[in-house]
Figure 1: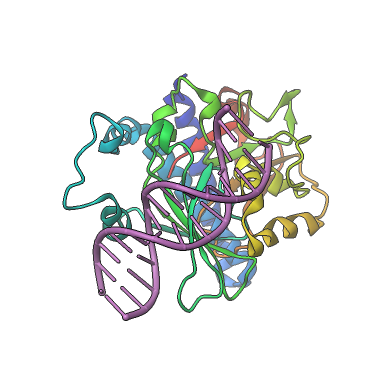
Figure 2 (figure 1 turned 30 degrees about the horizontal axis):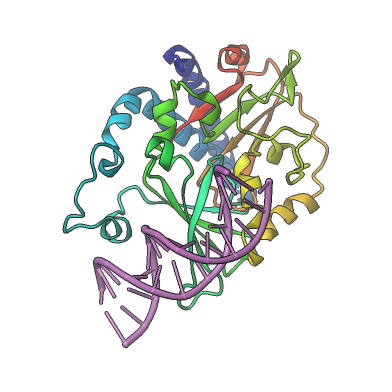
Length: 301
DNA sequence: ATAATTTGACCTGT
DNA sequence: ACAGGTCAAATTAT
């Protein structure tokens, strides 16, 4: 099922509008710079930038990326362990795709499998090593390293390496059930026109799952199976989920919300950013267009 | 039974 | 030699 480019264009336009609005907002705030609001505007801006870049990347590079990143040893006969061994490549030489996130949850919409843990010299907390759960299935070489911040243990410092070829590969996939959910822009409340926001076949847990209860609207929108997977992460790692559970956010007053999970929040408490906009307001007049996307737009880094 | 996690060993770079 | 990253057997969870 091709994520058609037409909806992507629509999303791109809308996000571009959002960016313009954020720029305007930042300009307005510029004269009297209240830090929080300024930061928020910056976040929105970055968010839009990332979304746009991701969209463009997803539409323009999807095929290229799918073919670009192929792990040799997963296809064809075993390549002899040459002088540049697997370990060498993975540990030392790969920096190009590195991205750093600060989040207060390790959940990011992807499904990860932990393959190692290491006490880091001079650091209170161990570093956890994850690779994409779809490595076996799709040869996805995405990896990440997660470590609790020493300054704020409820914050996780996450380093990403490699790209999620699994998603790109199956964006048009033959197997939607196995396709992980990277970044999600979610338009609307839990239901719109009676449609459940949980896409059929989505790996995301439904609300009646026994997983962590996330009461916050924004958190809920960003909820993902990875969160459940991470429940057993070792002693220090339970804090984030507990934090979510203990938080008692104000009841949502919006009619429509847009929630974006972004890898680059300055404020780790903003694991998800919710834009409160009213239906029919300028930013997302064409919100109905997202019917075509089943209310979800997958954005790839 | 199968899948995921843990953890000590091993490898590489500095 | 040491630290960081990965592997893989053993263990645990589902």
